Length: 241
Image (cartoon, rainbow, N blue to C red; front, side, top):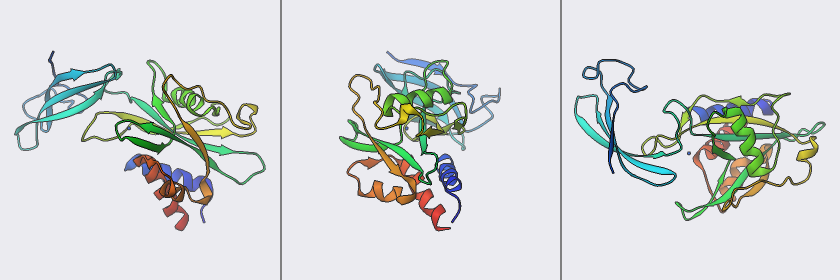
């Protein structure tokens, strides 16, 4: 059986490769860097904002497909999105270790999600603040959601490339960040206290990665988020090789 660290990184890789109308011209978007709007397809021609709330906006995209046919596509986007070339959020994969122990654990959070009308099981995650790096966002969100303090000096967090979440519905993108958590750190002893926002209710669970993460997700009452479930499947496959 491969070493546990190899299995975790392998599973992590699977997650990475597999969360008034205004019209804006999109003739020179990052996804279409050419200066010739009329010659390259597919391309985005314009974006019309249909409606907006505090956190989300509904937009209609006018685009030209591969055959030159003009089409429309509705998309949800975050109003907090600062730039089209920066990720909205981070998803944190915590790796908990204690000196002298072979155990390798992670942290899962369970919370009620109104769009689903039920609780979900997820890795800790959160939005990246303006001018904040993905590494710092991951360490901050880990502390706020779980109370645990991640390492940033002895072992630097590993940040994935920008990855999409649900590209048929939204332009939201994230970085997946591996964060080491030293259980010998006094701040991580016992049950650390999260620093949750108003209206945020989260249950934190420590899970041993060597004892069947996928079974924990299959047997739990909450609905697992897709990225976490893929991680668990990848871990199972890696351990069977």
